Length: 203
Image (cartoon, rainbow, N blue to C red; front, side, top):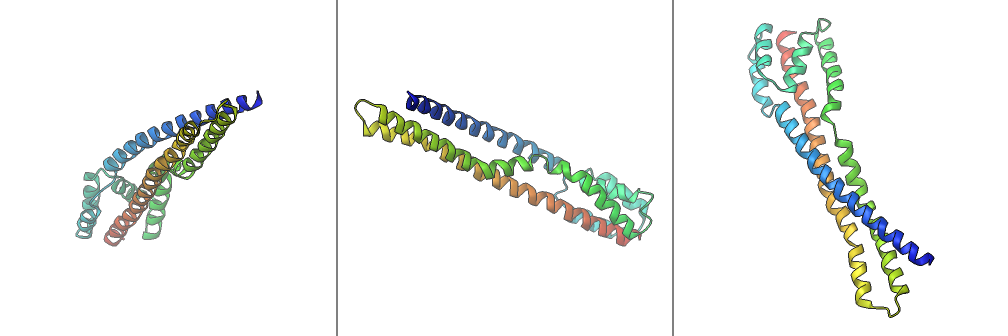
């Protein structure tokens, strides 16, 4: 009686884990699309062209005009630092930029923790589902009046699906995490490069 109850709970747990993995994969796709659209809309893809334009300008008004035409996050942060009344020299100018980066970066890194969590834990969750599935398969085999090797192999095969699902979900989640982390880090570098160009022109 206890064995049959354990088999039922193991089967239920395996199914719940499989549902959780598929739900996690859905949110990985949804969050990926949202972040990709956000980065495309807010980040400057051709920062070198903007830096070259700044390097050719020594007038503060012209710098402000050039940065105002660009709607990217990089230009906005540097423009805000230029307009900061406390940024009276290069050191305070870069301090203002750093502070604005720290405040804004949290929004850039939205969902990155989710991608890292799914990528790190999905294989273990899949393995747990497989163990539970194996428990159910062997319990069914032990309780069967006439043990059937073919049916047992079928149960084991089904149990392994959760491990496969966990790995399949984890790989793209980690790739997305690494890709977006690199994008955020590159954006910070671009802002500092743009800040250097502005600083060399007006300070």
